[in-house]
Image 1: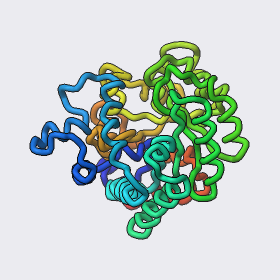
Image 2 (image 1 turned 30 degrees about the vertical axis):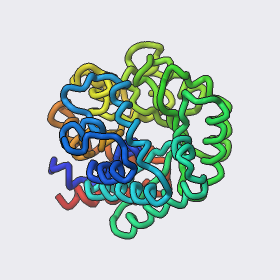
Image 3 (image 1 turned 90 degrees about the vertical axis):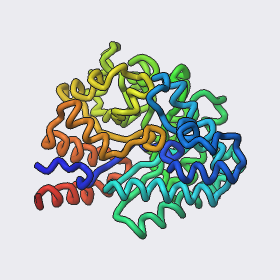
Length: 338
């Protein structure tokens, strides 16, 4: 089987808008916003936004890259441009379906009106779809460290704009704010017909995975790196057929795992827990989805045949299920032609 993973028609279920920005766009916008950055030193400038070799491998250090990034999205025009570029970059990597996560609260904080957030996101997506063979779903992120009324506002926003591309809610950021704090918001989102995913078991223990599934109804878990640390989290995920959105390089860079060879993806596969391979923040990590498939194959020893199986199974867990058949057909057609 052809393992030139660039040519594979791929699916990315875990990609953050802010963390996918192009470094040249960052530089342009940072200068426009007159941010105090080392523009004359390319290496030092890039280090503000990308993980570098000398960085401490912690989630705190990783997230520090977003401090400046969030200052760049100043208006709806910039948001539309960034959305287009994020989807274009996915398409240029032969991704056929991508779910893009955005942070509702931080966009509102920048003064972008809710209706303009949705218009800008869709303007960027629509332009990319006209130019490339790609489909998109939008996931609205809840900042778990903020007051409950912020979570309420985010869910209300997501429900209000379900008919304009928002397919799911996600619980993001500081895992010390546990899933059980957000039961009411997730019940409201799911009752309205939104899908549910949760960042869990990345920077905290496996109980967050269990509670995300059992209390919040999470259909997928972001990262889930600590799934084998106890609490029967692996059994709960298996019993609920909950897909783990694996982000290989990111999990090393954030310190969720200390070494790539410790990644639990193969253990999950052996148990029958559904897994997908995703980028997380390709701009910050300086990777592509093709890169992650190479890591899975060449470092973790997952065969091309098994990776094809992961890809087909990923299509069964997308939050736009009306596209599942089309995506599977694209994948099978590609491999039948090899």
